[in-house]
Image 1 (cartoon, rainbow, N blue to C red):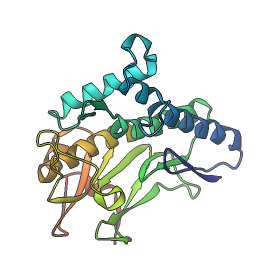
Image 2: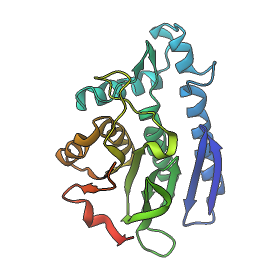
Image 3: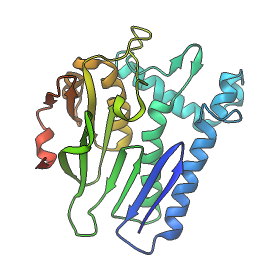
Length: 247
């Protein structure tokens, strides 16, 4: 079964190997809707918008406090390259998407669902094998020609996230140099033990520009694939173990 809905301002797709998962998929889409209602900086009544408008910390939800603690932890782990503070406001969206996908996967597992694929805005969590009994195949796009796939990876029980300007334009900045966007890297794909880890570190590594791929290399459990402004690819030492097709 496969369904796609527009939530959080992006297409979210859930595919399962079972056709008997309609109710479970509905629960997961409800989860994404609730995440959007709480964390969207575009919704005036969302909790994060209320916090930015002055809601005192004593009134923050336990979940919000937990997510903001994860953001603070990620900032520390990335030497400050992951920073949700912008012009005096908080925007945890660089972490929330991956976190929300990971939470969705946990919900499906808790309901007994195995063998699925969740994608939100290009960030993906896979569980088990696909309907053919093989690893899920995920393509990495050419940032200069997005209809072209440059690599295909085969994944099982893992997350993959790509940061790049070709999807949303310049939206990732170097917090150590305010207003400066990465000038060398064009896309950076990270494979991690789950999408939460892959997504948050892909965002931070992209902000590091050309040094980001070295940061991913240094992180246990992560592999990366960077394409720079000259269309040159640089990959971490263990990335090729996932590659099933060199396009």
